[in-house]
Image 1: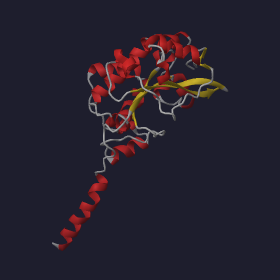
Image 2: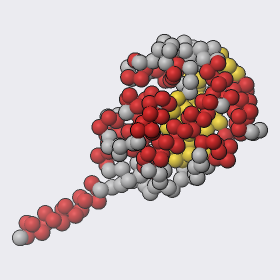
Image 3: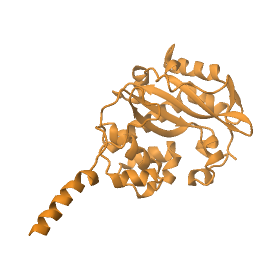
Image 4: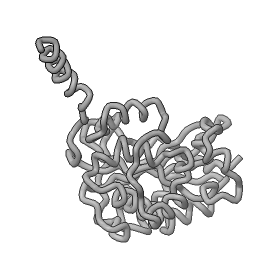
Amino acid sequence: MKFLAVFAAALALCAPVRAQQGPAAGDFSSYVFVLEWLPQFCVKASGASECRALNSNSFAATHPVLHGLWPNQSNDPNHAYGYCGAALAQKSLDKNTTWCQLTLPPLSDATRASLAQYMPGTSSCLEHHEWTRHGTCSGLSDDAYFAEEASLAAAIDASAFGAYLTQNAGGSIDAAALLARFDAAYGAGASASVTLHCATADGVASLNEIHVALNPSLLPAEQLTAMLASPEASDASDCPDSFRLLPAR
């Protein structure tokens, strides 16, 4: 009996460690909505399944595609806020990039179809990672979370901003001209919510990601103007005045 009592006490001590659930959902000040230019991503990730499938006829060769929607705390430049309610085993799988082993509740057929169009990274189980690390902190259901970000991706792609990217895919553009299209689509000064991030390909700056700062209370995608927020100071644009939109290779 004494052994059982000691064993039970040991289990009680270990239980909080095994059951650790991370920070509380909903404790954030803004969202960072992230689009990426897949041909640039594939420069360093050519082995990813979405990169192996990428060619000049792919939607992602000429359109910005969905990376994620990240609940963001102020003064958190590394986006450490995440994994809300996620078990330690899930967090470990995510950090080891074994994303297809992560648990993801079933999504509706409509949401799945939208992600198939706007998030080619689903072929590498990107949506599993995004839900585990970021979506769990949104306070939304998994389906509502992905439906919202897919709707945002579709709306921006269909705007003057998205059209300008598509029209100039494979060429070079000016940052000011691109941001002017965002203002044209969403109102004067709207581009203050946008930060552009570049990387180098063949020694030339190329668009890598587009970040859009949003208020923590999401609205339907057609009301994007009302959701725009100021980016964190740490999330500053790092693209030069002119940069490439890398073509698919």
